[in-house]
Structures are given as structure tokens and as C-alpha cells.
Length: 95
Image (cartoon, rainbow, N blue to C red; front, side, top):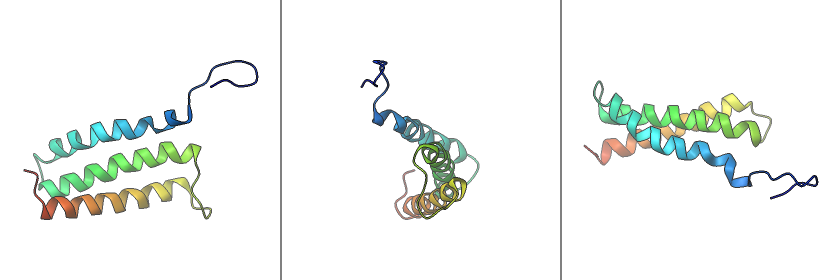
């Protein structure tokens, strides 16, 4: 894409590169934490951490609705994701 001055800039999909990083780091972090705690806790904690940082990065560009601070939206998103993944890995064991 080009702007009016003719300078090339990255496309709108480039903002979602943290999703790729979170998708790669999350399972690795869950496997590492799984050595010291139950795997469903490790999976939930890894999902919380990766989703929190992803939401913080994306929230700077696309602010959340209803005047919620970005950090609060990131914490809520991380909690829901971590809880859902922790419950799923409890009932459907991957190890």
C-alpha cells in the first residue's frame, strides 16, 4: 500500500503478528510449566500470559469499546482464555 507521499507501508494484517508469536510461545510455555504443575493449570496460565500480551499489543492500535482501559480488557481476555483452555485441557488431556 502507498500513502499520498508515495511511501510504502505495511498492510493492515501486519498488526496481528503478535498472534503468530502467541501461537508459537503459548504451547512451549505450557510444556515448560507442565514440568512443575498439573498440565491443565500450566495450559491455563500459559494461555492467560500469551493472550494478555497479545491483547495489550493489539489494544494500543484498536482500543476496546465502552471506555474500558486497555489493561483491564487484556486482563479479562486473558482470564477468559486461560479459564477456557484450562477446563478444556482438564477434560481432554493432551499428555
